[in-house]
Image 1: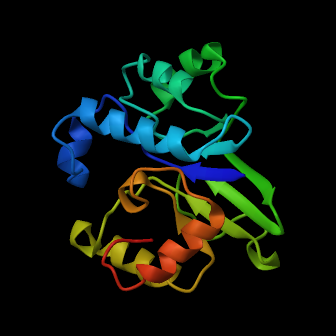
Image 2: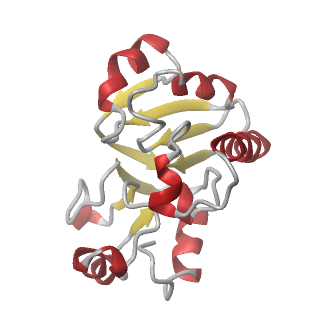
Image 3: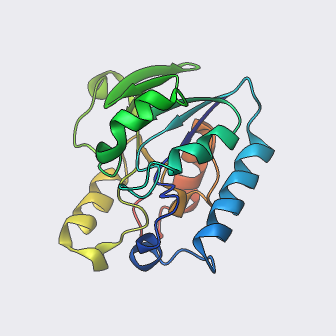
Length: 188
């Protein structure tokens, strides 16, 4: 099975203010994500982590990924740059890329931390799975309304933990979540 997740932001207290995460503490958030992940993912499964694994100046966040099941692959996010060398040295991720194109069953899937206007295989029925924008809405700026409207009919799926209930999701689950939440204000 292949799973996707983005923007865990382990050990990052600032994320609570930005995204209104429903936890009492960073420790509680980490415990919930770890438990949900390990309950769902098996050791043989593949998990694409689409960036922003933790607080950008705290390489100890990398250690949390040693507690998580599955074959983990990182798509680098903007908060991963300062600890990229530490991430590479840790060997926690089987691959580290800035963008990738994979096959998930019959689907060609472009993976990028950032939402894109166009992506690899865009015109050949390819999909996009991304993160970065969390649960932002048009209240966060006009660009987010434009993005919501643009993505509404595209095969693009937000894998940010803030919109996927803090657990890795399959591509089919991301598709279903987008359909169920199509009228929600955040970009899905």
